[in-house]
Length: 301
Image (cartoon, rainbow, N blue to C red; front, side, top):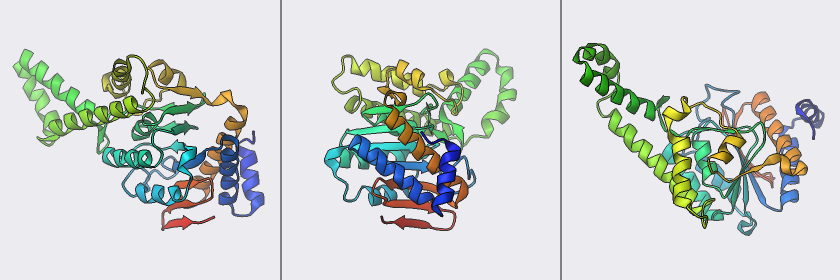
């Protein structure tokens, strides 16, 4: 497997051309698996201030571009690297992908698919992860504030004030920072995301499995419970994800696939680090929808 520096050397030797090297390995993976390949890569770690690094409705245009003319009978390998994003946009993307591919979709996680990225992975029939890969909690956020955290804070305030009314003076400035309707919106968002993921699990990776309902509930509890996970940014390993009931396969099982997936990953990260691009949606045929800090570039092979 070419390592990080070897991929960088290959990019330099090729001339520009992050695109050439990235597409070489995308095509190689498709030849190995016989399945369609789409990458969804965000540069939130390289360009944290860029507008659009999170999952949002603009991504639908990218997926429409790269799914066009692909042979849907061959299934889809979706390579994810994302911090997550909007719940509504995530639901729309999953609905679109399933309308194209049904549940014949594998999520491949070379490094990180957090929050809404984990939700997308849960909608797939199988999740492929390596020792370096992580998913994350699915508790929804409001402007960076965990919805579960807001609800828990209100419950704690109610409990403490009921037990000791003098505590009201302590809690008043804390609670005052929230809009009066926020707790209701948070409760709805939690129910929405949990129900959404449960439905995807039951119709996807848990379909036909004994006690699927109970297993789905366990997964939702483990991924969606803020008090269990402690932090929205918590990294959940392949071993942990498998232990809670997700259908996780080891990337290391097939060295050819592992080498090629990690080569794609390195090439994508080099692209996001060394160019103006902050998001790449691309298929194995070289059809790409690349968002940069100046413009959106649609590339044809």
